[in-house]
Image 1 (cartoon, protein in one colour):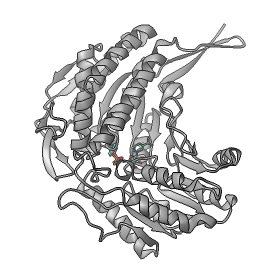
Image 2 (cartoon, rainbow, N blue to C red):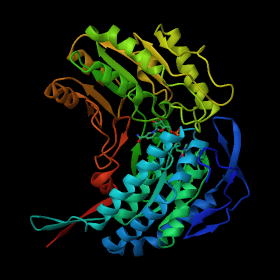
Image 3 (cartoon, rainbow, N blue to C red):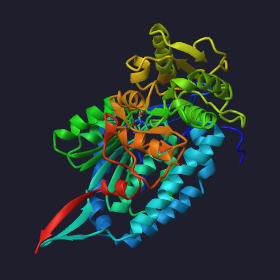
Length: 479
Ligand code: NAD
């Protein structure tokens, strides 16, 4: 296999329903674009509500059998899925590099690597019998919630899928998946692995299509018990409305505007290097990105010099070039949205430190230069709105109370960071931050820790044992 070249035209013509590749109800298709070139590289079916009905019926039919399957047997199925998926790691990385534009090295490590780690963890959790508890005269048991509708975004196209499908299956639920229409090809590789692993028919089904058609039909379907969604806050709100009509449960993983708080005594070169890398990860198309860098005034000038130097190392380029650290944005529309945010920040008086509208870019594709603004007002649009592109806002603070106030001045609360030579001081700040995850001095991502947001960053948690519990109902049996 030539790992240096993008895959040839990638076209898929089927849905995956009840354990088989089946024809869609209509011949409509959705093109898939390579954002580094702007060229179409493949197409997938545009699913219709009738396809959703068929897939939900398959999931409903499979549910009693899968829910009754012993945990060890469910774990054995997931273990086979892991093996089949791991065998496709190179193909996954190349497909994500092609349909999303993630640089191949990063795609290999994160886009292909992370879902495998998450799935491995779920194999182990699935094998454990569900915890039961005695409370007085009650036996409290956990049972699978039922049929799950999973709707996922494009920025980590396999990870977001596995973060839902693996715990749902581990808990004994059955699933209908609608991946993002911008990056559907990676989901097909998962279903190749599902076929190879021989999962029981109907436990997991694939209906590609657009949000307004397939996504809405799935979220509104009367036979879907839980809608598990990752994406924008605006779409999450719509899905919650659709689910509320029938009091169905929702799990929402939404946007963020996370703060990276750098206290006066921090190891500044490390804090800035890691902070810039985090903000620019996947071209800034990361829900947890630390897009607000808060720096103590005593270190502010020094920090800005370090930021500019770090950003210079992220030259946008061809995702298949091993030297590339920054790929394109996923689409022309996304690149334009990001440029609009940059223009607005300039109009609002933020000081351009790196990048900006005039920075050099590759001649084709949806590229935006990595861009840094200093002196960003905490109430300005750039400090408040999720950009979802390679744009960092640097904000000074005078003392810890002000840092915490600025960090919490957001309608989001997904992630964050604190840097200090005093780990107790850092922990005290982390405790005061109204956000679902905080990393102290570059603490590593833990795929078994609960992941999710406060405020408008979402409802519920994914990953690990806490994530698995989202796919269960509690029952109390009195004796
Ligand atoms: P999006 O909301 O546009 O789309 C996400 C999914 O929802 C896609 O599959 C889309 O087809 C579908 N969808 C769109 N409209 C729908 C509707 N009316 N009904 C049902 N489904 C619909 O988001 P996106 O642009 O794909 O992803 C970017 C967003 O996702 C960012 O805001 C980012 O912060 C967020 N995100 C959050 C997390 C997290 O874990 N918190 C992770 C990744 C991305």
